[in-house]
Length: 90
Image (cartoon, rainbow, N blue to C red):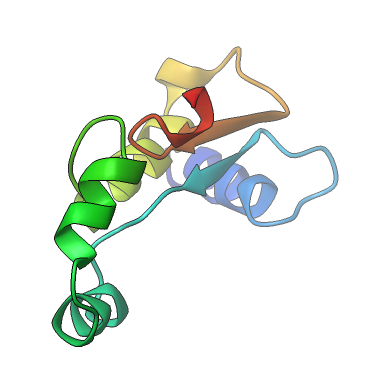
């Protein structure tokens, strides 16, 4: 199991064939927390640009990476998984 997971991580992070990539949207981080405090209207901007109406959580990106590394995604290759709250649908 460890070796299978290790090989998939190598592929995700830049191995030769690549099983997939994650394309995150606006995610809650210390940097976005700073922006929220410094920039007036930040919350309204997020609601406007994010079709889902909120900023994403780091855990949501992590869960997507774990799924991509699992056997549940064994038939997925070379795909960019948008974890972006729907921004790409706009």
